[in-house]
Length: 115
Image (cartoon, rainbow, N blue to C red; front, side):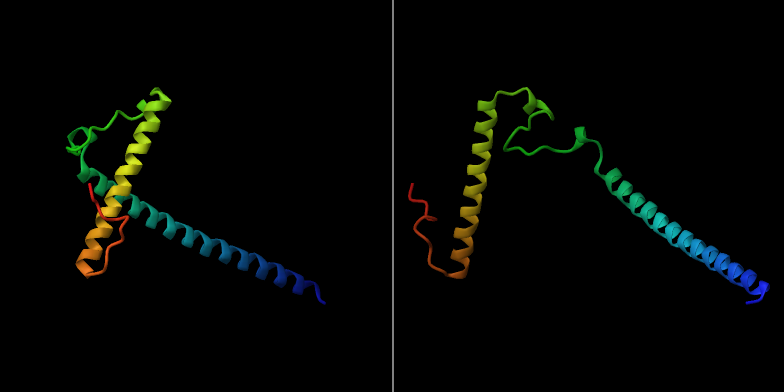
């Protein structure tokens, strides 16, 4: 092989690697700009919500201050957990009964509230 063929091979390798890095840079820039655009949309959505002090709280239950569970007694936390679990279970049961009632399906005896 003549000496100038090595020069052509190295020039081609360097040119291809530069082309690869340019294309990689363009792709990275586009992904970065898409991320910035998504962050801008998320910021505008959060800006519309307002501060936490101005948001209405649910009327049926008072929320504890964030982080108060760390200093609460384990018995109180267990009670809150069990109460929340039973409340969720009861809501699911009510929805199931209503759904079966709407569809005209027979009710399960365990789902009926006889009390």
